Image (cartoon, rainbow, N blue to C red):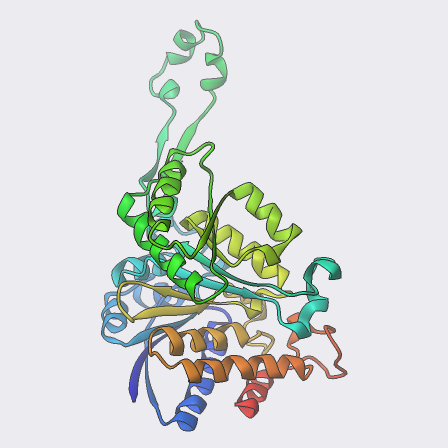
Length: 381
């Protein structure tokens, strides 16, 4: 089979880790008789530098015509002072909307060889954990109405004296500029992401934990109502509600209690990064962004790490595992995906470590470079 993949190498360590994933995909192609063709496009800070915008139209068109998209990472201090609509991260938000990618799958697995690197006590993690975080991706506070406005109490000269006539207004006169971001969800948005979570649970341990803030937020109350209604269509799946602050605590207290976590855009963003640290390194966690079709956007959940870019220090495993998710979810190549995932686990069991995992487990080797770790994975393939 032939597959066309759009490559968005991005910024910082992005080009290095994408090259590692491409090498693994090519090896999979040789082993199983597939052909992967690649076309590179600009996205993020590099696109700003070259094209003046974080997501050029050519990139959008290229990603729409490709069978799937593999992304490295975007962003960095170089572009931090730009206005919100010009920041490199806008490329991610734009692609999700343009490609209709409403669900984000983030597996969080503790490999047996890395039990010692988890910050949790051994008695908590010795049994391991395998969590799938299903995050809604195109709604919520990241896509709601936002803006800035002057404080109403400072709009015209002389208002201060007038407003000070009533108790408490003196403080309001010093509010200055006001910024706002709006959290909103529709029934349809919640229904479609809930179906993704329940369907995923059927292939796992048949448990869904829906995370919200229904004791405070009206959007979360609708979230909970809709999730329960959808859950009635999956009587074989156990459904539990959990407030987000409690969920953050429970991930530390007992991560093994979770199977599938279903949550909103912002809550999912935060909880998945928290969960990543329980595995020992964010450099191990992949992700898949999917919609109603087989086309997806695959990327590691970590950032561009510009401080180590070009030094061969980046851990390529999260991007390699993201490529494995592409094989499984976009191309339907389950055996090929299993092969890549088994190779990653084997190199970790063999004691191979990049700098972020140095000193973890039974190994006497020096930390491996990005290229050296990739070679080890290729050997196992």
